[in-house]
Image (cartoon, rainbow, N blue to C red; front, side, top):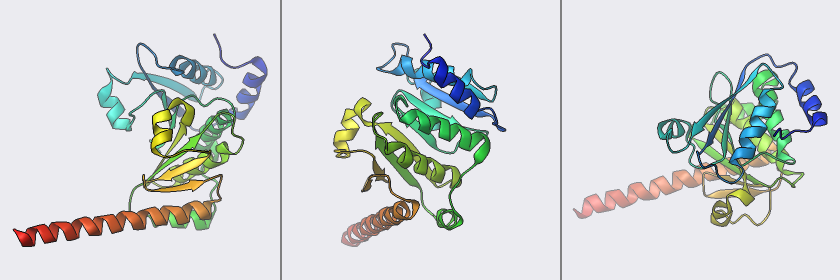
Length: 233
């Protein structure tokens, strides 16, 4: 049964009418599908039917373990949103409610508009020398969440050092507990730094630098421990 009502289909068809580049939706699920896996599959197939430039590929998380490892997917439902290359853009859970606009935004970004980040932000991203992993926790009923996820996706599109996950927190409660998600959107950066709310690019960049500085500090401590141990030997 189709997920999208006719009125929404018309709007999506119009939104995707000017796509110039192919967009691939790579789904991960299981034979005995998880909660929302079936709905997520149907939603993506519905969207793909509305544009000749969008297609869907479906993989099983267990039997296609090598493919899951290739994409870095470790939970389902998962959707990789990519073009001719993989930009590191993922959504975990079903992008329902307000998050459906995030899905359409990401398809349009890859298919026609490109990143809309300003030049200053692009230059800051170009200067990144270490990997950055953004996990943006959201819920379908949060009107501010799409802005936060879209910013992460824009940064991932613009920089090979950034990968960005939208994570529907109610579908992954163990992660919500792990990252102390009391409200959304909440962006977790490299596991150790978080940012609350739909922040502007400069604020997220500042938090990214904070996370990278923390990573450098941790590496320095580890090196000191190794040197001490070697000295003791």
